[in-house]
Structures are given as structure tokens and as C-alpha cells.
Length: 267
Length: 80
Image (cartoon, rainbow over all chains, first blue to last red; front, side):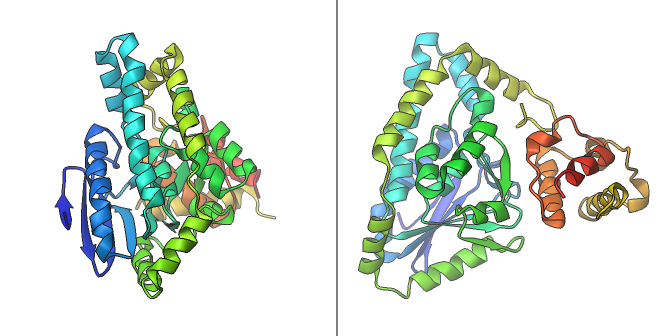
């Protein structure tokens, strides 16, 4: 499919760039509908990239790039299942999202996440699959999963470890705090910081620059500098599934879903 | 050395500008969630603007339980 308009996202090829636009209210939470459409995109990627040298992932939502996994859906679906069925169900979801993330990570064309606002949890993990993250100055990055009794489950820890030092990995993971775009750039997560509202324009300018180079060389360079940490990604799924069935996680999810606090991301 | 009063005033002006509330209607003791009518996303937006303005990092866990401008200014002062 050269272009696609779904319920949660759309894509098209424009002047050698594949534009993947996330657009699900309120802030692109990734649940089964988004996952299904991301799988369609991953399946279409091989044919799309024959006419493209770059992929830009961005968000149409004012609140941000992506607030992560759809915790309400996760909690509600989990409640519908018997206890013994929950771990297999969450494992199935993780296996599917990992296949999508790995396809994006290893795509031979150059990938750019143009992010703004909330880039949390699974949204941060999606951005981390990209070769370059270009961030609006108002973007914030966070791994809030420990607040729920979980670890990031969409490949975040291995990809974060690939890109930055242990001090940053531990700080983000163990405190669950958010950092702004300037900090993210200073630690090596973000390639460029833009003025408010300018991340997508800069991403297109960057894609145009990348398009000037011979694609075979770019592909070879990417393979050399960006290995996929497959063993750690597998281990992440195992740890997530081990943690998921504990009562503390159910309590954490319930607390989040039922929260009316002004800052539900804080413990 | 920036004083607590200067820091408080800077925050009040930032909040007034970005949430379109007249500065004269904001008081250091106000609950900024209620006064500005902001949600969690907007609170993060305010945090980012504060970090940029003061050139500091302010971990969001330091804002736990903080809801008035003066206490927020005290947290910022400890990072200047």
C-alpha cells in the first residue's frame, strides 16, 4: 500500500520519504488497534522503501508524540481474563510489538522520529527504534513503568543501553523521572532540538539531506553503527512477563486507571 | 544571587504568559493547578518552561506534593 489511512495512524510516500503519522486520541496510546495498524505498516515497509530513502515518524496529537502503552485497555483486558490467561495474553502482545519495533529498527532506510510533548514509555521506546530523534524543545521523555511495578516492555531498556551510558539508563529507569529535550540531547538521546512546532520541518530537511547520499552506503553505515540487541530484547520480554502477573502490578494499573490526580504519572 | 522573591516572580510571570492569566490575578500562595486550571500534561509543560527559563533540571518527583507557586520557587532555588 502506497498510502494508508487507519483509525490510529496513516502513512504515505512523499518525495522519497515515508511519512508515518500517529493520530489516536488522547495521545497515541498504543493498544491493540494501534498495534494492528503498526503491523500493517511493518508488512508494507519492504515495498514502500523501494521508493524511499527515509522514514519520518511523527504525531498529529497536540499533547505529544506518544504517551506509551494503552494502560486502560491493558487493565480492562486483563480483568476480562482468568489469572492463568493473563501472562500468555501479555506475552502475545509483547511478541507482536517487538516484531514491529525490530522491523522499524532494522529497516534499511534512515528513520527519524520527530517528537514533541509527551514521549513516554512505549512512545519513548518507539522513538528509540529510530536512527535519529529530532525533538521539539517542549518534548519530555520518561520511562514511568516502575511506578506500575513493571519494566519497559517494548524494547526500551536494550535500546536505551545501546544509545547512552549506564548513569542515564539507571536514572531514567529507576527514578521514573522525565527529562526535557535539552537534557536528552546532552546525554546523546536526541540528535537535534528545534523551536516549538518545528520538529517535523527539521525532520524533513534532514531527510532531504540524507537523500543526497548513495543509499547502499547509508545502509552499510547503519548496519555497522546500529546493531539490534536481540538477546537483551528477548530477556526483556521474559522479565516483563514474570513481573506482570504479580498483584502489585494489577494494583498499580488499577490505581493509574482510576486516578483523578493532577499528576497521575507520579507515584 | 537570585532571591526567592525574584524566582517566585519569574514563575508567576511565566505561568501568566503561557496559561494566559493576568499576572495580577496570581499570588505566590495560590494552588497553581486550581488557579491555572491545568492538567497533568500542562503541568509538564510548565515544568519544561521552568527548566528552560532557569537553566536547571528539576526532577518531577521533587514536585510531588507541591502545588503552590512559592514552594515551587523554593524547589527551584535549591537547584540554582
